[in-house]
Length: 159
Image (cartoon, rainbow, N blue to C red; front, side):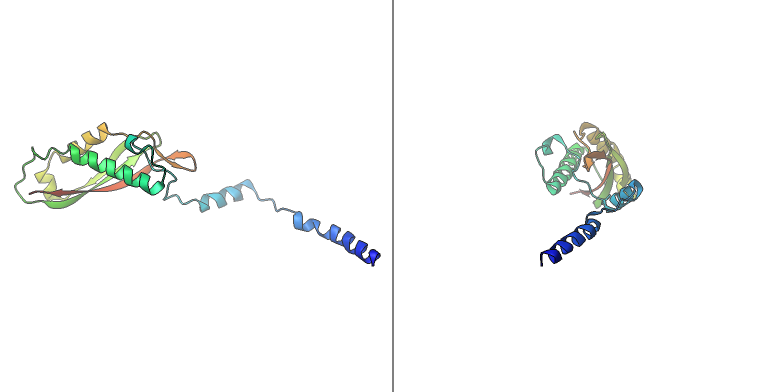
């Protein structure tokens, strides 16, 4: 019985090495696998304004960023100085980019032609508000600063 047990342990010892072998993969295959596993449409941390600096939850960071940006834009529109001839109830879509150093720029503004006629200085109001409000940090993905793009709807209503 002892010989049988000894024979079994020796044979197990010789065959068990294959269970501990690891397959080597090339750097290229590892890199390709990791790149494909990353969701590039999502960031780990959103850009941060000073008002949002203490927020750590990702969705709350995004909400704070968008709320702060919207509030700044609405405050920059001098509603008491704008006179319109037609009743307005429309939405303007603004597209922003925050680059890897945290610079906020407006890339595009989609505005109805009637709004363009009624509010010819609207774009300058938006650009001035953006210049006065800059994030203190860009978005991050896996600890690396990345460029992000945001779309923000602005509702315009006249009374």
